[in-house]
Amino acid sequence: MRIYKDFTFEAAHFLPSAEPGHPNSRIHGHSFRARVLIDGEPDATTGYVFHFDDLEAAIDEAQQALDHRLLNEVEGLSAPTLERIAVWLWNRLQNRVPGLAGIEVHRDSCREGCFYSGPAPQLRQAAE
Image (tube, rainbow, N blue to C red; front, side, top):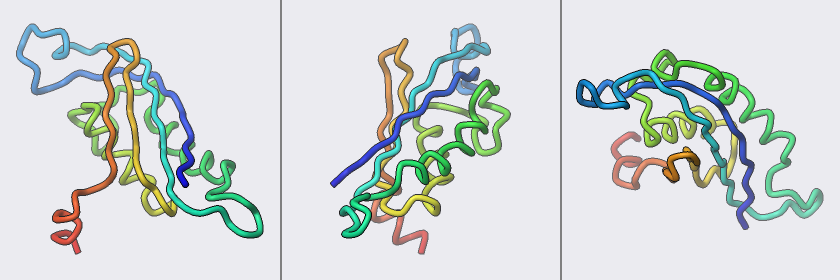
């Protein structure tokens, strides 16, 4: 079974790899939407895969670190692409959210998004 919780944040960023003069090379802002997905089986007693209050508490710290910030100044996000934001969120939540199955990050105004389900298996083995 899979459950999820969405959250939003407003933030500015620029992409250091963008060519000079490209709009992404300048500071600009987006409304971001993120989704945290958890896999598991409902507990026999509570009926929950993971209590949503506990999930919200785990997400809150990450959300506060991103919301109304210049993402390039957030530790670990000097080049804040959707891909790097998704990995940053995964790394921030993986030890707090048992069964973490994926992170989605969207820029709805651009109709773009990224889905990250953790390091690839060969990278997980190399890291161990």
